[in-house]
Image 1 (cartoon, rainbow, N blue to C red):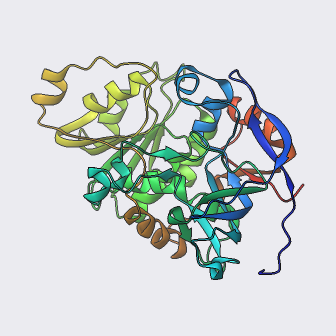
Image 2 (image 1 turned 135 degrees about the vertical axis):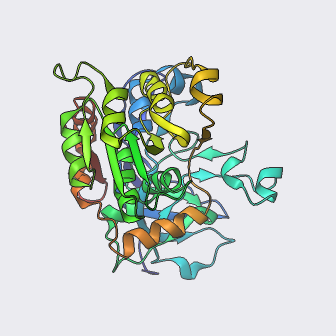
Length: 358
């Protein structure tokens, strides 16, 4: 690997203009800064954040500045190092923490870098991994055992880590847990909760395909509030399915109605973990649904760097959680736009892009 000859150009999926869409273009490979490494991307996974940027919604249009390469979930091989980095890293198989923290603020110095106010996100604030190569700071590398995790699963570690943190924030062993929203993160959560000893996991979503995956990942009961037969009585169903005893609710959708449901469905003295991001402010009955119920609310974003990654490694390498059923498609980079269409149509779960396999 030390004799690896780098090309001068590469393909990348980039947002060229501050508008909806993206283009597959040929650009120079990234410059490797002194504290960075260059990774040859073997697998990259599409996240809901990428879809927001592709569609150029209100959040992305206020945050993201074109031109930029999309993508932040990845695995690959280090092929070059900056002048300050040990060159023996070349050849290492790695994944990456997508949140690049400053290292000097009060949060970073207090060992809580996941709350760094100066965080720079790969694929949002700097070029991402939907490309043949990506340059990242060495400090965000997560060294991965290729013999235990193949590139596709390794690329899911970043997203899976978010679900690990949200699911295990309160010990689920012996508890009844409701997962609201069965997108990929919610589906990850179901598997994590079962592996961690939850006695019962019940799940809701408006997409039947996702609910079928929820059952496959271990959900004991599933419910579709959008079904004509159900008439949207989600709280009533949750109470019945849990015998009015939901200990923990993990809200993964961000849908305002689902967030309200979380507070109404959890038992007195229960726990609500909020991970899904709502598109607008949500009105909550603080007196009846929060104070008088004596519930504990935890709002979470991202992973604890790198504590969550160690838990992620244990769950995946041990085989306690198998993510293969959630990989619905694997496509080359030149079919990336097709992948986004599949996601928008609700016909896919996790889609892996292989930039160097065209």
